[in-house]
Length: 512
Image 1 (cartoon, rainbow, N blue to C red):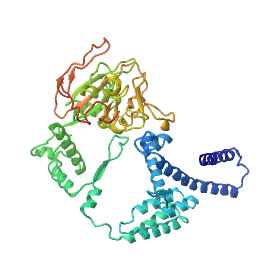
Image 2 (cartoon, helix red, strand yellow):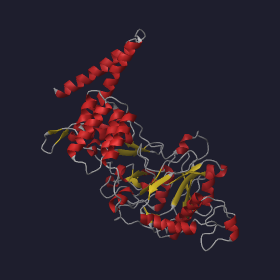
Image 3 (cartoon, helix red, strand yellow):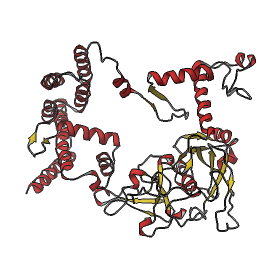
Image 4 (tube, rainbow, N blue to C red):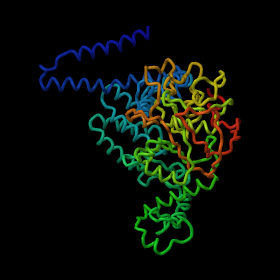
């Protein structure tokens, strides 16, 4: 009876909306239009309260894994085609404003009861809720629970009469008055705030960085910059940049870089030195290296871009410059079917050669909506799982990040290879809304118009150890296909450890 009543009430809302949409508003006066907008705005403010109730109950009834997703964020993002950040916002609001229950099943008030009540009555809007939630999170930890409740009630009362900007300013002043000296610096606070993060690549392909370095971290780079960021050091404008010893007076005099530019170039030199040292070991079965995907057509035309294994876009000019001192691997695909040619294996774990081929083909995790690049992906038996007699042939494999890889299995996601040799992901029933089955996020080359040129992919690897060995792939290419028999990542008898879950070759031990 409860389910039928809820369904009937929601149906009535839809009918009311349809009736309103069908009515003409041309005859309404200014006062009547404003009054109608007032009513709609109040309803718009109230509706999220119902969403909070439903989301809170849904999380009590089942789990994200049972729904077929890695997390509740993924459930919302896939089911209703919203961003994960928007899904997170809805879940956070539901957690703070929705109904709760104790471990014994007794009903509890929301974490922010005054805010929830004001929203349910349409007295505050979503922006007010956001400002109150943000401000409540910033209240110092020494403030007790009873005082927090009084502060929340005060802010809600203020919100009923002012806009979000005024509410934010009021809350900022209140927080300042609570703790005018700010938190006392200590090791715990420094450890919490430490971090370095990058922003998205800009239109000029530059990547912004921001961060907070601990005293120890800055002491390390302070010494490095004192040497490698000095005038005349690591200057890319020099024919032979100075990276050791002391630069010549001519190099110093001709160095017109700013301090920020010299520190940038020092970081590049430090990174290249570490990569070439061979001390970084392996990552997913390959030596830690820079891997860049591009096409032979782009290299020949000197136009286009390359894509790193981490998903960064590199202008073709930089790709060619980096390729001048790197090992190369040519991945060739069949022009008719797009399948990868002649890389087969009788073991569960994919070979390094197969992984390189998959990086060239897929570029990253193949699950639709996933942005994890190739560096963070595993090799997945896409056509049929190894436990179900699947084959470790390159045209039956695909890249998948660890969490998505583990979502494949009975009553969960399934994968298959379609006629275009793309990995298709079929969602479980609860998440299937007819969405796209193929992920094109890592394949920007598909934005270009088709042509008659055969799809040839060049993978440029800047190896940590500079190895350049040969191996045979087996099989014979047709007269229209050719292979580069130079292999840069180790001897032909290389075998990854089956005991290491981070080696390439499909899922981790408990995965599909």
